[in-house]
Length: 224
Image (cartoon, rainbow, N blue to C red):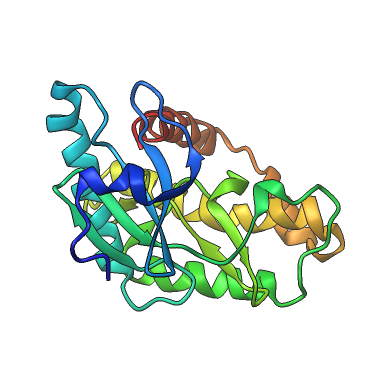
């Protein structure tokens, strides 16, 4: 699918833009070919030095995450990489949670499915790291969650040594806390007392780990 796609084809195949580019962040396009749509994270318009160093590394790194996720329902398929500078991904039919107002209820099975999905990619050694941002979750037309934008994700293997392993475990927890945040926003009656305690917990050690995590997360978000 999209096997013959070239970077020069992207502007003429474009049927929408999900996010405009910034100095470091890529433009995210929606393209269509033969009635099939895809989302393209395109770094090819960046300046020469950034394009041929950091951008290529980020594309390679996110593609590696997608290879780990292959076969998991609830994550988009990666169709291909174009010239090392653009990721062509499956478009997920649904509504981005960023566009769903606070208080609008989510389907009953949504949260259990979300937890099952987190369990599956955590078992493969990946933490998403940016799920508290509503824009990274889609409510599919089937009522199930789909998680997108894996540019800030980290792998367990990358963080296997102390003290990085503590930060990795914190990121795993953050992925789960994103469920509580969504419940509070959309279905607050579903939040259990235990979830609320975990969501608000601030031990001294956790504060230190959070501080390191936040600095790393900000860096990942800026370049992803």
